[in-house]
Image (cartoon, rainbow, N blue to C red; front, side, top):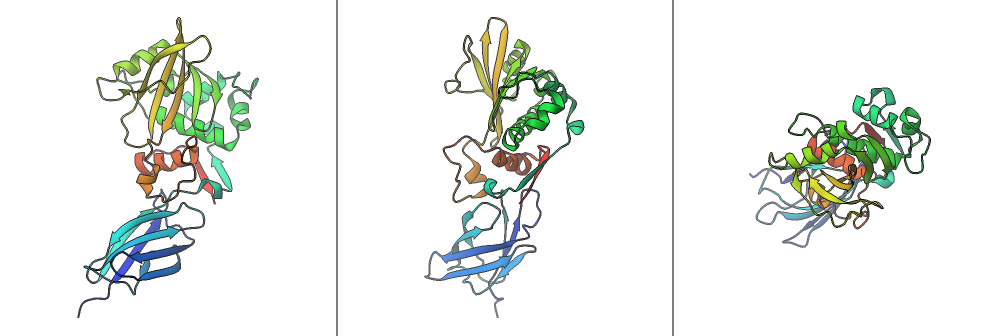
Length: 289
């Protein structure tokens, strides 16, 4: 006698830890008319029975956890026995109640040096170093930590990290920052194109600051969560607009059904989830939900 058809779900966050909360699961059979709804606690693997197996085992599954984003995909169940599917869930930024950031003293040296030299950040004039770090709201601080982490993990062909070249912050936003950089960073980034560390990118959407002209834009080759450096020059003075792009792939990475932030500046908490899940980078902060 064939074994009972059983769907086994492993629902985890980007760190691979079980969600540990009750989730709603909706299964719609795509061949028959069957619909199954269950609410289950995702602290362990979940077994769902009462389903059809192949050749009638194709389902659309929708999973809605309280604190994470809504996921949806199509699955095929085996003719009998257990079919196991893992799902990784990014946090829902709206459900974050607190963000725990790395203490200033534990930041990488290049980031501390950058903050110490940044006393004229728009909206935070007169603050620098630990004072500046402590004054930033969660969104700006998360954006800073995302980009600094990615830049620190990006080594140019001369062996230096991209972060080590950034001299002074001018403006911080959740999805990007604007900074004073040396001409050398632009040249080393250009030189790194032939090594496959960057490729040239469209700079037309990045507006130069007053008095500056476009000086090239470059993206890292990451499929998701690539860093883009867009340079502007005024004589020998250089500034850069630096951001991490989800490359329109956030929905694809996680099978997110409804990304409420589509069409808006990339939310830094989404970038955090991409960096942790896809690039195994630690942006230096965690969430409480």
